[in-house]
Length: 235
Picture 1 (cartoon, one colour):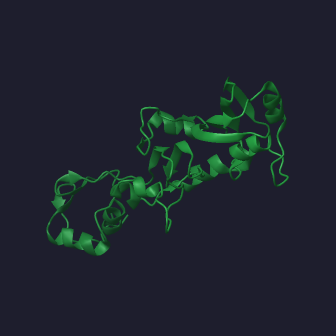
Picture 2 (cartoon, one colour):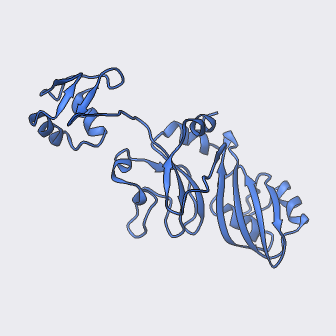
Picture 3 (cartoon, rainbow, N blue to C red):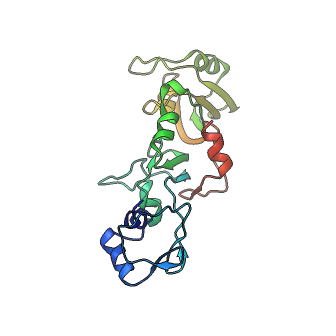
């Protein structure tokens, strides 16, 4: 990889700004000052440093966010704050994107990455990746709803959902449930309950595949996935 491309990719500025670093003798390769930005380096085998700080090369980033309400799952928007806006400048430099979408008012687990292959595998209908949600429901959720969800329910546009696993945590005027589905249709959880004459008043995603929301993350906070989490997610 060209030295200027490596440094630009790792957030050290544009290629023009990287050349300025070289002029300042701020860049070394294996301890030797380098002035030629076009030389090729192997960041995994060679020690590339800027101001004596080693450049840690990373191609992909994998972030777990506890998405807050009021923020949209998009890379950019003219009107609303996006989940990418919540990231630090270095993370934004990798041009990551949210894997799937959570509604603007929905909270919880959101994976943000620049790994397109992983994102495709998690979102592909053929992969049947399960997602579990916690929700508060206006209305009494019953065993009949469990049976209906297990069979699949017809949405307002005539689409028949795949079977969902509904668990009742509390049944009352405001019920609490967990629902696991293998699809991601527009407003699907809300529409499934609307098909049963009930209304979702609060929605939070807990899991996506083998990835579980870190409950230590406050709303709007994020952290890199651990190696174990990433390995489990790729299985």
